[in-house]
Amino acid sequence: MVKRLLSCNSSDLLNFSASELKASIKASEGRTIVSENVVVHEPLVPDITNSEVAKAAGADLILLNQFDVLKPVILGLYENETTLKTAKVHSNAIKKLRKLTGRPVGVNLEPIAKDAVFLSDKEHISTGRIANRETFEAAKKLGLDFIVLTGNPGVGTTNDSISKNIDLAKKYFGGLVIAGKMHSAGVDEKIITVKDVQCFINNGADVILVPAVGTVPGFSKSDLEEIVDYAHKKNALVCAANGTSQEGSSVDVINRIAITNKFCGVDLHHIGDSGYAGVAPVENIFALSKAIRGQRHTVSLIARSTFR
Image 1 (tube, rainbow, N blue to C red):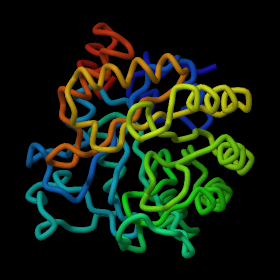
Image 2: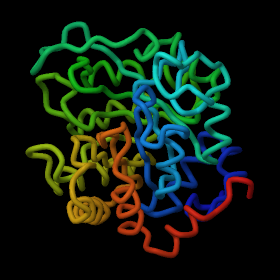
Image 3: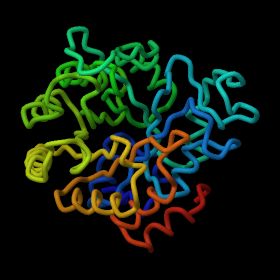
Image 4: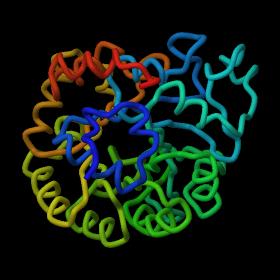
């Protein structure tokens, strides 16, 4: 048995194994927030990281986007490194970020499909952002807590390419593995189906990533409920992602998305990075926190010292 994440101190969280982190999230009954933030944009507050901002607004897990595991750079983490021109590669970047935020830290790694049929122009990304054995091993060496196998807009990630990389991630990374898409990733295919979920879980995924209801056309409450029901029967968790720039919408939109997805039974609520500085508006992270767990638990999280 582990303490529910909702009640954890940093000293608990930062010592969890992958299975303990998963159990702690499950025990929190749909009251866990994943905040995604871009590490290569000038931070919202120039002399601190976007991750620290997200934690202070109510984030439980920190997900780094555009982070190169072979050339680790996080703007705002080190003094006078707030732009790419001034930034340096630091092998201890994740260790330091975990200490400063007191939160588990993960990264997007993107399985690229060579035969993808694109809906939009193809985007090219660095080798250290592409899912493969080398980057999984690098992620483990850096001390990351979880990996999200997904795709940014236009990169060409398919559900098949995600599925094929899950067992590699489990073998060479070993931490918590989240798998799925929050939008098309530029590919002309259905974003996710129950059949995809079956493949992901059979290959070892701990958490299934799906779009939040209301963020992509045609993905309904009944679609999400079917996926949640199947995943939970197979002992997997579900993360509903608000990753289509609606993380920058009004507080009312954030609240409606949050409650709808909680009705459907999701375990984690993701909020994306499309604020002006690569992190969701702080008032929206705070609103999401209050919507899914109320004022008391929100204040407890943002006020609790990372030294506890």
